[in-house]
Each structure stands twice: as C-alpha cells, then as structure tokens.
Image (cartoon, rainbow, N blue to C red):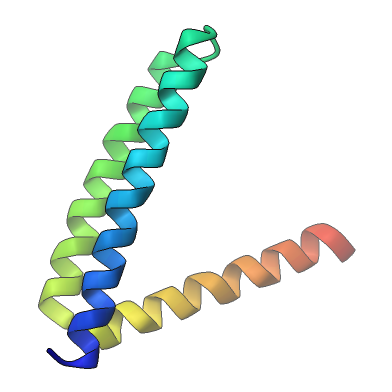
Length: 87
C-alpha cells in the first residue's frame, strides 16, 4: 500500500466519521425542533452530488489531485477568514 492510497483511504474514513457526527447532530437538533427541513434537504442533495463527483475525480485522478484540491481549499479559507477578521 503506497502513501497515495493511504491518503485517499484516510480521506474516505474522515467522510464516514463526518457523516456519523452530522447524523448525531441532526438527531439532537431534531428532538429540540430546531431543524429547517427544506433547507437541510437541499443541502443534503447538493452534498451527495458533490461527494459523488469528488469521489469519481479522486479515483480517476489520484491522491495527488486530492492533495492539490485540499491545499487550494484550505488556502482560500485562510484568505477569506483573514479578510473577515482584518478586512
């Protein structure tokens, strides 16, 4: 098993854990009546579509592509947060 494969497997495991925590949060908020179901359904559909497209791209292009996309997204978030904080 190469390092690229471990990166992709780790990313996949993170998605599974994230899904579990999201369902737990949904359960907590739903029992308290604090869920906007229509908005959540739209976000869920877009999340599923994005996950499918992302998974296909990751499998087609490999771990290097995933790494670059991850770094670009993190850099964009750092810049946005910097502008939000200091801009």
